[in-house]
Image 1: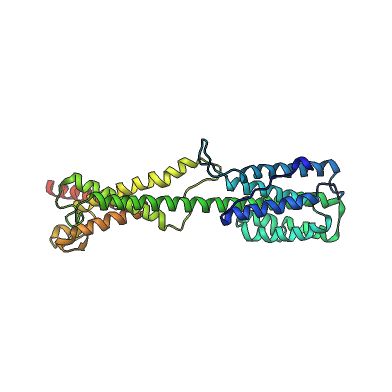
Image 2 (image 1 turned 180 degrees about the horizontal axis):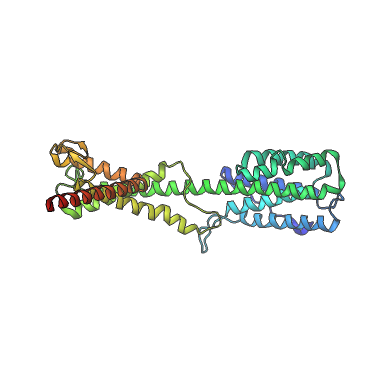
Length: 351
């Protein structure tokens, strides 16, 4: 098919991810050339030609992205190649090969797909439906062993559907991994900027007198900065998946991880500082009076209380969601206890 010839792309340097894309793209092209002419009777000749045409359409679309330069002298100067989209298109071609391969290859392909399904799909219902004791693959493999021609076409479509589930799961997992790394890198960059700003514009020893001298405005700004640092440090260190939805509102999810959560962390740093000043739950210092005898007291030398407040702000920003939930509950319980005591003392006075 001369009209489907793809222009080769030559690059001086390619990163490993691009090399893998080129290798997969070239491999699929070479394999597809073998199936341009109808060669089995499970599908009609027209259907086989239609499948081949769809495959070439996918490969041509991938070729356009591969041939797009990263930088250009025209607007927009930086152009995205959409690697995740390219992999999805290549996987569609891979899946369609199940309909084009020779009958002798279908059984081995089914074994490979079943193995991949077992390794990648963790949902119990899907596993039971496809690879369980009474799953779909059990019937497929039995029928392929017996070489039942009347079920061959149905089995091809079933294998293709199973392979699509595997590929979609892998595409989603790699996309999530990519989003996790991007969020961590952005958080690390913002953390570096905050550290630079703190070094550039804050006075010497800003923590020594934190919460003791300098007024509310200076303390408030310092606490917010420390809370933000804790939040972005948490993003860099986290091992859990960030909140992203494949095919969902990307920029809203990005803003949630880069903006909303750090703002909550900044609030947590200020809240914990204010909570300590009330002495409701805990106290920092060396007090031993009866007023603080029934709360948690963190004994710190008076000369180093500012550093204790700084550490408290960073830790509060690091685990803002957990700390805020826990502290809100404890504050409400403490207030209820004080209200009950006040009510009981008032009743006794009336008696």
